[in-house]
View 1 (tube, helix red, strand yellow):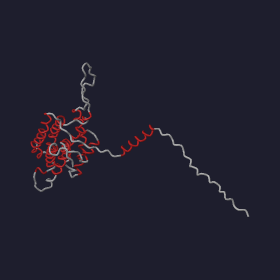
View 2 (spheres, helix red, strand yellow):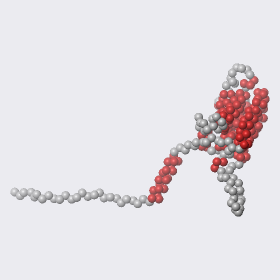
View 3 (cartoon, rainbow, N blue to C red):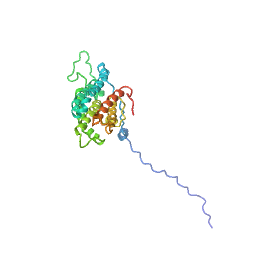
View 4 (cartoon, rainbow, N blue to C red):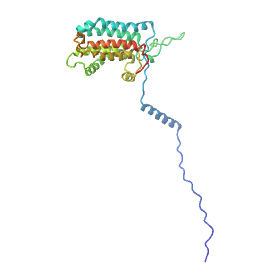
Length: 275
């Protein structure tokens, strides 16, 4: 009987798996792809705008006007108060242009123009260099044009304020002229300075509308005017039977008093603070 062979068959060595060739990567393409991804993430993330408080122009005229003009505005209302009680529509119609003139003077003299932060200053020519046509002055925005545009925006927003006042309880079927003129006074006092310094910047108005802006004279006037007008509605339903309780005399009192107080406090004690 034959014996089995004791010689073992050698096992072949294990084969390594075939490796695929690595594709060549262009470093320029890779860097552009990374930059596009970073830009897409930056666009997807919400951008938050943090407003800085509005600085009053540092000139002797502006510093004097910032204290004199609120006094003139309050004095104008005190002088016209009896006429307001006797005939609200006539008194508000004649007082509105005067209040608008004081606000325009305040904006032009004391406040920075919207977009003036990014304006290029005028460059002085070098010795022997000729001035180029059209480049002899600063490229900043014009204060008069900005005032006119701000007045137009104030006029356009007045019907919106009228609707808001009706929703908050103003007479709807009667006293339409009373409510519309009261809304116009609110727009001129509280919103015109903000239009002048912020323009139509949507991000800035989102911060202002969310009441997260820092206090200054413009934002303080807005808050003071709104709170004062709201508190001015308190005496109307009380049974005191006074002539000055009729619509919208007390609203106007609270509006002017709150605006002046908020403007003064916002530019002094509350400057730079936030809610």
